Image (tube, rainbow, N blue to C red; front, top):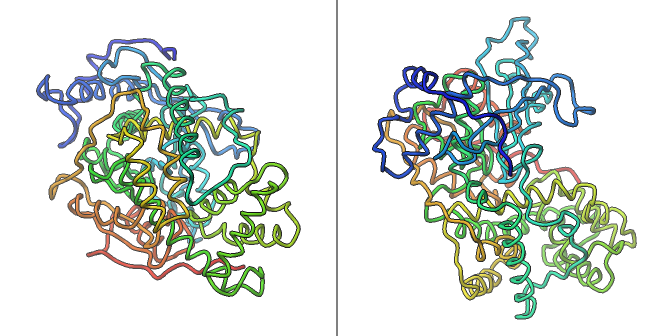
Length: 528
């Protein structure tokens, strides 16, 4: 990885930035040998440098098919915040300017409130194009008042993308998906995980240690400074909530308003392994929700009028795919991955169910289209996997012994067979990881230390189980939790629920929160 940009002196800029720092911002007066002191000073240097440089917005990468309102630029951050004068990398930032209009049609101009930075999830996901959400009706009011801003985090394309293996090798062919994998299958998967971890180390070198959530939170502070915002207004979804929580702990005085949508459990004891196991267990409930929905629409799909019959139809399809993959590309593992993805979003339920029904009826086309590999997206998918693996493995401790993974996978599969082993295979490279692990921060803010924040959560979310939202609520003094009852769709802000969106707009546009935790009725179930 090569350095980007030139090393410049920033002493006078740093002094000016510190003089303007609000209460609670990081201080250069921290004890020089305190944990993280060098990184705190490095963040101050990098933020001052970014504030002076700003962002030169222009044409976006690959912008041929994008609306002209989206403009892009870059922000330079240190690879290692302990050495801000050393190697640097670039983050690509996208912005859509506040429209200033009134979506309600009154003719009054909306008062501009600065930039709303939106980090949509990951690790490994890009937020570069999320400002285009402003084109949707549910986002018009926010887009009128705020510049909508997103960015591609460190390691995510287009700038300095991480890679752990050849993207062509990343696209796997049809595979089995046993609920009780044999010792031979587990050894095969362990060998693959070890090779993947070695590939991450070989392709990235010593820089691999610098891809973790603490540096992602520091990068967010530099992006804030580059945008010219004195304080940060932020909307984090999924993994973005963890970056936001770390930011709230590290830079509480820099927060103006902050929304956490679908919360990663920030308890240091849960970061990494325990959160992964909790997600796998929660997906069993989502799979049951989906089967109930399919059974309720048996007249449309013909897959059975009970959960048990739907399960039998799914297993029949999986067995048939094991004998003869659909289109030569979709086996049992691809089928399960497609339905696991449906656990994220209710909107996928009709499409996945139609594909399963068509396949069992003799037409494999929809299933191949939805579950089959897409070689044209292999580079992007491999980059996302590499960043996710690096950040997750670097963020905290993981069991090193395969015996622990086998034991816990076997136990979990007894009560949550649908996602248990897929979860183990996803995170198993962390058992062979070659970079140093971070010590997770204990996120806690005292009354008055942090501006009041808004937490949004779906009660049956499997990707970020609801317990994480309650945990963050306990840890951030002055925060308020709004729950969408009965909802499992991952990410509730700006969706079809006017109650949720009402709380979101009241907070971001007027700074108003409910007096206490609140609940919204569930969104409508998807139409078959």
